[in-house]
Image 1 (cartoon, helix red, strand yellow):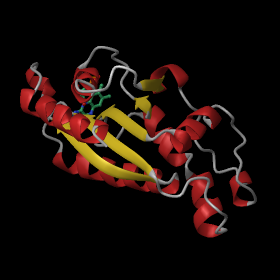
Image 2 (cartoon, rainbow, N blue to C red; image 1 turned 45 degrees about the vertical axis):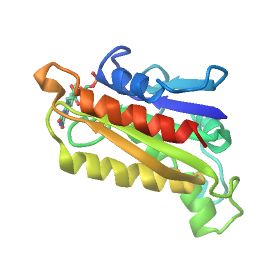
Image 3 (tube, rainbow, N blue to C red; image 1 turned 90 degrees about the vertical axis):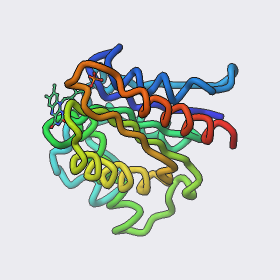
Image 4 (cartoon, rainbow, N blue to C red; image 1 turned 180 degrees about the vertical axis):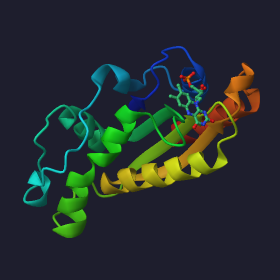
Length: 184
Ligand SMILES: Cc1cc2nc3c(=O)[nH]c(=O)nc-3n(C[C@H](O)[C@H](O)[C@H](O)COP(=O)(O)O)c2cc1C
């Protein structure tokens, strides 16, 4: 099983990482896990140059590898905090740049690279409860995943990190979700 993680917090050991660690508690030892740290990569934002309106390409190549890995991994995990009712800018750039796949697969009806056989996971954390932002992020993730042939198989949210403690119930849910994903 190949697992690809899009990690979208600038804090390498913050709450997002704690939730992600929970997810991996029951991972098999030989699991192949590849992670991209989006705050290191800082992908360029879509500039609506319209190049992808003609063919499945992008004027920027900084996400080529990320999109390849998203289309080849068995499990794709997005782990992100809520920023300003949304996702942090680097992850928003990834979402916006899936527009090339919308143009290719939805508008021009080209053959998608993968046949909807990927499994996706969304892990979110927020300072407050952030019910609405989390719903929005789920929709954004669902759309980006769908364009890449990935089905959102499960999600876990850890809220109220402003209180300064990790929500152990959310970590337990992440462990459960990991167990479910790794058992199939
Ligand atoms: C720029 C910025 C914007 C934020 N916006 C929100 C927000 O809209 N709602 C919320 O509940 N928390 C918000 N937060 C709080 C983070 O989601 C929270 O601190 C989270 O635990 C950070 O995760 P990390 O420890 O993995 O970096 C924001 C934090 C930052 C730095």
